[in-house]
Image (cartoon, helix red, strand yellow):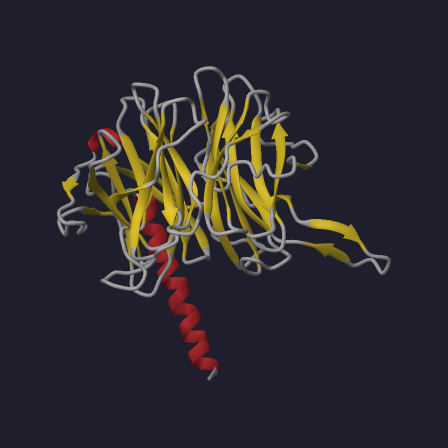
Length: 377
C-alpha cells in the first residue's frame, strides 16, 4: 500500500516537473499568440487555491488569490505574489478572516473569498475581497497600497449593502468613476453594479437588474465600446445555459434586460478585457455542466470578438478529463501583451502571457468549439 502511495507521489511530482519544463521553454513559436506559461508558485503553505486576480503596477505585475485548507474553510486567507526580475515571489498572506481572539487564546475567524486588484492611474493599488461564512452572508472588505503592494492599509469593511467588485476587476470611466460589477446570492443569484468616485469613501449602488428567479446571474465582467456604452457578461447559474449579456449607455446607472450570448457557461467564473485597439478577449469554460465532452471545468478557453456579440475561438488553454481549470482573470499591460491567470486543479495558479496581435482565431459554428483551434495544453 505504501509503495503505491510513493509511486503515485513520484508520478505526480514528475508530471509537474515535465509541465514546468514545457512552460519555461516557452512555446510561443508553436502556438499562435502564446508567449509564455508558468505556475505562479510551485510550493505554498496551503494545499488549495482559487479565484486569482492580476494587475499591473508601476513596478510590475501583482497577483492575488485565496488559499487555505479548502474553499469555505475558516483558515482561508488572501495571498499575493509579485512578478520581479522575471519570476514570481513566494506567496505572502496579506488578509484573513480573523474576527477576534478568545480568552483562551484561540481565534474566531471566517473564510475569505474572491480578491480583486485594481491599480488607479497615478493613484493607489486597491485590493477588494469578501469575508464571511458563505457567499450568501459575506461582506465586502478593502485595503490600499501606496507602494505598489509592498505594504497595505489596515483592512476596512465596506458600507452595508456595498460588496465592491464581487470577482472581476472594475473599469475606470472617463469621468473618474470606478464602476464595479457585483452580485448577491442571498435571495437568488442577482447582478447589480456599484460606483465610487472617491477611492471607495462613498458609493452608489444600482438595484438588481433582474429578479434572480427566471435566471440566476452573478460575477459580471465589463467591456467598453467606442460609443461609450458598457457591456457586462455574466456567469449563469444554469450550467447548461449560456453566458448572459447586458448593456448600459449611461455609465452603469441603468442596464438592459439580460440576454443570452452564443457562448456556453457551465456555471463557472469568466473574465474579459477590452484591448487598446477596441477588440475584446474573454476567458471562460466553453462547456456545459451536465452534457457534452468535455464538460464542466475540464476545458478553459480564450475567445476574441470585434463587437462583444460574435465570438471566435482563439486558444484552448487546458483540456483534461476529470480536472478543473477555472476562475480566470485577464488584463492587458502597457506593452500591449495580455496576461491571464486561472486556477489549475485547485492546487496552483497558471500565468499565461499572450500576444493578441498574433492569435489565429477560428469560427465557432453552432456553439461548438472548433477542433482546429490552437491548443496551449
